Amino acid sequence: MQTLIEGLLQALRLLFGGDGSTWEIIQLSLYVSASALLISTLLGLPLGALLALSRFRGHKLLIALVYTGMGLPPVVVGLFVYLLLSRSGPLGGLNWLFTPQAMIVAQTIISLPLIAGFAMSAIQAIDPALRLQLQSLGATPVQISATLLWEARIGVLMAIIAGFGAIISEVGAVMLVGGNIEGATRVLTTAIVLETRKGAFDVAIALALVLLGITFVINAAALAFQQRLARRA
Amino acid sequence: MYELTKIVKRYHSRTVLQVVQLRVAAGRTLALLGPSGAGKSTLLRLLNFLEAPDGGELRFDGQLVPASGPTLAQRRQITTVFQRPHLLDASVWANVAYGLRIRGHYEGRQVERALREVRLWELRHAPGRTLSGGEAQRVALARALVVAPRVLLLDEPTANLDPANVALIEAIVAELRGSAVTQVIVTHNLFQARRLADEAALLIDGQLVEAGSVAQLFEQPHDPRTAAFCQGTMVY
Image (cartoon, rainbow over all chains, first blue to last red; front, side, top):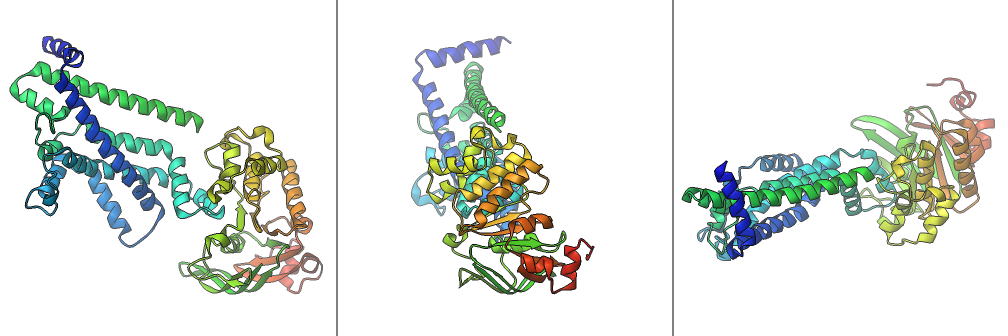
């Protein structure tokens, strides 16, 4: 209990005591996860719509891959991205290993299947007759997809929340591809691991509380927005 | 407007529709009659290009519709009102405006005119999914008419509606009958067919039995099955 209280006080000191490095870590965490979430949303929603509305060669295989990706351990993604970006890897020329870019790539791979898979399920839950109705009104396939994504907006928002939840809290992938370099690739989760290993539990708890606070605020805002949508539905 | 020749539609290996010859002239109203499962709705989906025939020729506006489907411009000349309205999770106004928005021709005045025509102007801000069945079907009709289609397809549009809503929808269809709009209406109601249509076609078991003017089909049918159907005798 004493440690927890110390952690809470330390959290307040770190946040409001002018500690620049804590804010740097928070900023980088948000930058990496927000960028990965944006990219995976932009790719995942059209992919989810495509899987829900189209039939093509390899369709079932792609769905199986998405489902597999939904349960992919972050550390495996980290290893895969590490091998891709390492100097001898196929994308080694980019020199992205141990940079925020590598962390964004890894987190995008983690959240993309979650967003695509949940978006696909949300669209599939809509009455298929509505799709025919939209088609009969002259909508193009892209317009139909966009309309159905909006119709399934509560489920789509859940998909994005699930994607965010998976990446803001993951540590394995960003540790491997980012390297937890101070001032460069250190984010909240990797900093917590480091401080715990050092035995600096007060700092670790402080950072954990900050991480919990960020997750709570973002999820609460998303939930409020979702409930507003549900009331209008 | 439409010319169908030796049209065949199959689901899996089962033939569900066979039409040797059917013409729908521009500006005319055709009633598609027949028992449930006769292929009327399938035929309507072919006319709306929602499905492609498995065999035969379908011409629209004199042009052969290729197997790959019609152009978007051709498709957008046709709208359908289905038996169930399938409204968007949006306001009445947004539902009616949908067709205009996707065409990039959104104009509030057109939406207002369509809403007033179906007497739903007062409900324009209401969520579409809170309406009664009759009101929702009137939204579906306004949504189809607002884009000024050349062809209006109606799949049992008044099934399960109360007399007041039936009368309102029939009045709009009847008014369109004198215009350049071509209409095809699927109905089980023979009286409705006589009231609204210039021509009628009877389908039984996926086969087009007979087509002709309403007067000819009801008064002097060529096929004994048509006579039996018009007299209300079970032929299926």
